[in-house]
Image (cartoon, rainbow, N blue to C red; front, side, top):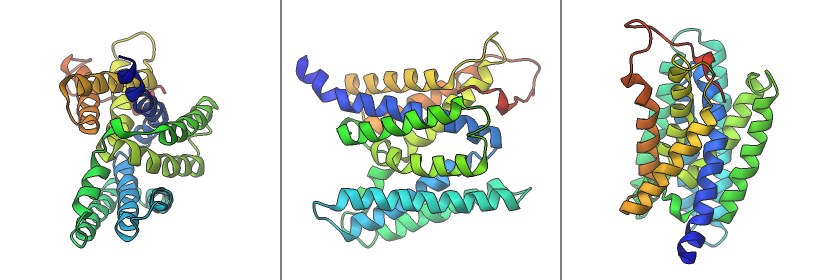
Length: 262
């Protein structure tokens, strides 16, 4: 029992920190109507990290991989910011094309390395159970910083602050959780909060939903011996869609993403 607790300690802390980090950013993503932004940024981080992994295999490579991921994510975030500011129409399409280009680049790059496909698969759906103390502490510090920004009214809504925070947050989250789980923890909590606010007196917390659903997914993956990253992505995504089962208002009613609460 003690061995199990010790084994799950840092993966659990990593997952909770990742959920707390990503949920407030996801609320802002949904408010801005740029859902593809996190996919594009995460894919750019994955491509940069993949290229470094393919180039270096020595003991110092984890730091280089992390630095490359942050650089790739930051460059992509600034590019997305430019597109969002210049395109009143079609920005989601443009951001979506950035994602496809990054994903295709990853596939092309992985074809030239014997371990490229394995690296690429890991970046898409990482095994959270392998997360270590360094990853947990990194995501924990970033989560605290994002919560501080989210609590200061209007600060996270500023373009420069938002895109910088997103670019810095996505890369380490990607390395620990994988692209699919990162996307799920960004979008599903914000969507759930938007949908639930229609049937509750208060404003439900996206962060609480993210933590609860992520922990439930981790417990399920351990109990059934399922791939942890993919299980987290699947459970959180489906949980985010649960409010759609109930009818809210009239048929075809739209929801306002600004109703989401972090």
